[in-house]
Each structure stands twice: as structure tokens, then as C-alpha cells.
Image (cartoon, rainbow, N blue to C red):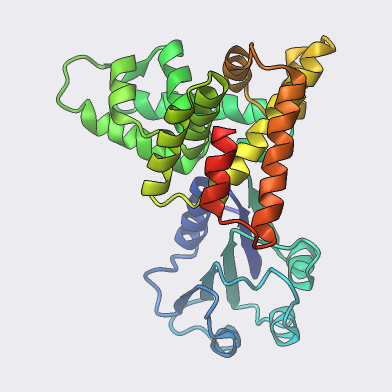
Length: 325
């Protein structure tokens, strides 16, 4: 097993893999059973206490291990005291940070890059087209193996539906797979059906936004507004919904523009940040929409976002205007 460095940073937006790596490192260090293990979480973490413990010799162990999560230390200005303290760690101290937001230009990030290890995990949506396709394929294989380990099988069409509903976020997918596995425990039929998936699996925010776009493009404004109301009722912020709608209208316009030029699907998917099934669905729903109309939707969403930022319009009103326009 590789010897750990004193400084370790786990970062990105693929929560499942980040948590997996964190557990792997803590297990390797036998940390959580150690009297020389300390954990801190959140932006209120006491910096002076972290630095004090970092310089303290371990008790009855070879190493003192500090685990810190979502401290915000890697964003904005780097505290010079923190930078100095972590630059002069005893050999017996190992520090593990788990951060969802990091500034790669910060002094702290540069220190970890130079003297430590950085484990970056990003989900498929953040990757370039080729890398994303490879990652999505790997995630499908992982899902198949997870079901196989429980004596369950799934067909290709059913797997595609599962990915369409759950997305490629491994934390979300892991949760939905666990629900399916529990649901099938007492079932003599050991294959996952379409009905099983539609009954058990939650729809992602992205999928719900696609439903809203589909309803709007087909002229069913009342359905689009109802779907929006459902998302707000489960505490999805109006600002996030509006942002995702703007992204989808941008993808719609790019698809219309590139399709009119006869560009291949792979180029369109790359430029519009769409998966293959998203492209097929968007193309189907937007058959009656012109490129100019798609641009009008995009322009309106940007204008409404500007009004929100200027304090001229509440987010919820902007959402309703966008969906009913």
C-alpha cells in the first residue's frame, strides 16, 4: 500500500467517490479507532486548535491524523498562519481535507499540489466529451456489477432508463440501486424490470427540468408550471431551477443551430453538454421550435436572471414568467 503524504486533499463534486476515498485513507491509517485522531467540519472550524493538534505528537500511535471537511479554507485568501503551519508539519502528522469547493489558484492548493497529494473526483457532466463517455460507460458497468453481486440482472434498455432517471452522480445512483435491491429481496423474479425502476427510483432535478422543458415546448404551460410547483414544494431553490432552465435553453439553441448546419451528433453533444439520450429527447420535443424561437427563450432566461440579480424581480415570479412566455 502506498505510503501517505502528510498533506492530502480530496476534492470535486463526485460525492460518492470522494467519500469512498476518505474512508479508504482513514482505514489505511486505522484512524477512527485511534486516540490520536481528530475530526473537524464546517466553516467554523477552530484554526488555532487545528494547528495546535497538528504540531502535537501522537499518543500511543505512529501518527496523529486530522480530518477536516468543508472548511472553506481552499477558497479565497489563504490564511498565512495556516499556510505556515501546514508547511512545517512534523513527520508524524497526517492531514486529510475533504472539500467540495476549492480555488486552484490559492496558496493552500498550491502547497498541497507541491508537497502533498490531491485526489480530484468530478462527475461525468464536468468532463470533456470523450472522458465523460468513458466515465459513463464505467459507471454503467459498476451498476451492473453492484446488481450482479446481489443476484440481480438488468437489460440494456432498463439500464438506460435507470441512468436516465438517476443520472450519473454515483452517490444518487448508489442510493437508488440500494432501494431497488431492497425492493427485490422477496421477489422470486431476479431481473430488474421497467416497472420496478419507474416505481422505485427517484427522478433527478435534471430529469424534472427536462420534463418542464418538454411540457413548455409542447405548449402545455399548465403542466410546466405544475412540475415547477412540485420542485419548489420539495425545497429545490427557485434560483437553481432557473439556472438549470437557462442551461437547457442554451443547449436547445446550440442543438438547433448546429443541426441546421448538418453537424454530427457527437459534436452537438459535446458543444451543448448533452448525453445521447438527452439529445434524442430534446430533438424530439423541439421539432416544432425554430432556431430563432429557441434563441428567444435563451435571451428571456438571461434577462430574467439579470433582473433577479439587480433585485428587480423575485426568483419565483421570474420562473413563472419564463415557463408561461
